[in-house]
Length: 177
Length: 266
Image (cartoon, rainbow over all chains, first blue to last red; front, side, top):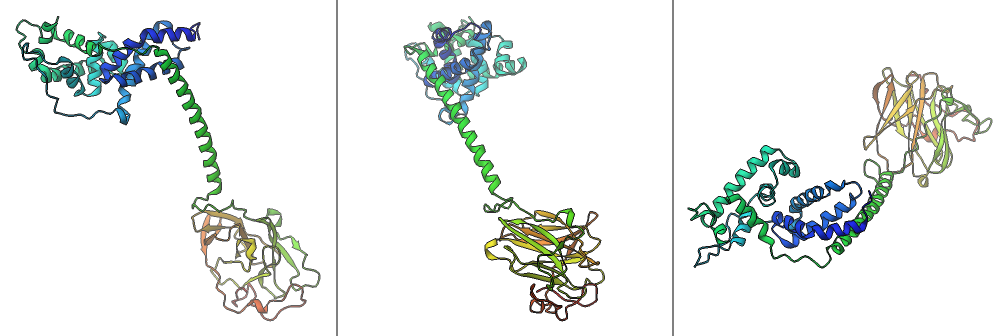
C-alpha cells in the first residue's frame, strides 16, 4: 500500500469530504446525491489506494467525483427532468435582488450536464481549460466551446437579474455582497 | 471582479450551509464493504449462471429440444468395411452368411445390424434381432439404372429402446452417406461393402432419440451429394416371405439385387 495505511485513508476522507461534497453538489445540484457520489468515489479510490501516487491522490479523487457525478445521471432515481420553464424567481422588492441561489440552481439545471460540468469546473473551481479537458476527457477546444455556450445560456436565463443594472460593471449579486 | 468570477463564487456557495456527517469515513467504510459484498455476490451469480448455462447447453439440442441426448451415431468402424462375417445366427440358418454393417451401443443397449441375402440369390437385406431391433428384416431390390441408392427407417425397433434407425443401400462406389435431420443437423456415416452384394454398399445409422425427425439421406461421393429416395414397399419382398433366422433353407422368390426386378423391405 506504499506505506499508506487505512488510518491515512480515513484521515484523508475526513479532510476532503466537505470539499468533495461541494464539488459534487455543484455538478449534481442535489445535496443527498452529492453525498452519495462522494461516498462511492471514496470507495472507488480505496480500491485503487495502493496504486495511486501520493501527489496524484487529489487529482485522482476529483476525477472520480466528476465522473461519478456525471454518470449518476444515468441512474433512474437521480435523473432530472429537463424543462424549458424555469421556476418563478423571487425578487426582493426593496433591493431588486433575486433569490440568487434558486435562480442559479434553476439555470444550471437547465444546462446539458457536460456543459454544466465545464462551467462549474472552469469558473467555480478555477480549473484551467486544460485541466477541465483532462478531467472530462475532451479537447481544450471543446471546453472553450462548451464554456462559451454555457455562459451564453446562463446569461440568457439570468441576465435580467444577474447582469441587469450593471452599469458599474458589477453584476447585481456582486454588488449585493 | 468580472461576471465569471462572480458566477464561480456563487456556484461554490450554493452549498454553503452544508454540515458534514460526524464521521464521513464511517459512511465510506460501509460503502467499501457494500461494494466488496456486491462483487462477491456478482461473482457467485456469474459462476452459477455460467454453470447453469453450460448445463442447459449440454442438455439442449440446437433445435431447443431439452430432452435430446448427445447423438451416439453407430457408424461401423473401418474394420468392417469389407464386412466382417457375423456368425451368431447359427450354422445352417437362413441368414448365413451374414456380415456386420453396423455394431454399437445406443441408450445402453448393444445392437448389431448385418447384411444378408436371406438365402435369396442377389438379395440385399439388413437384419438385426437384439436389444434394440425386434427382428428387423429389411430388403431392397435392384437399383435401377441411374439409381444411386435408397433409404428407409429401419423397423421394428423395440419401443423401450427409444431409438430411430435409418438404413439403406447405395451403389458400391459410394463411400459415405449423410443423414439430414429435421432440425438441419447432418450426420455422416460410411457405406459398408460386404460380400452379401457386389453391387451395393450398406449403411445404418442409429439415433438415440425416438423423436428424431429424419429429413432425408444423401449419397456423398467425393464431395458430391445426391439425395436418395426413400424406399417404397411394394410387397414383393414382404416380411412374411422372409425366413426366420433359425430356419434353414432359402425363402421363396424375392427380387434379387442386381436384377431388374424390384422388391422392397418388410
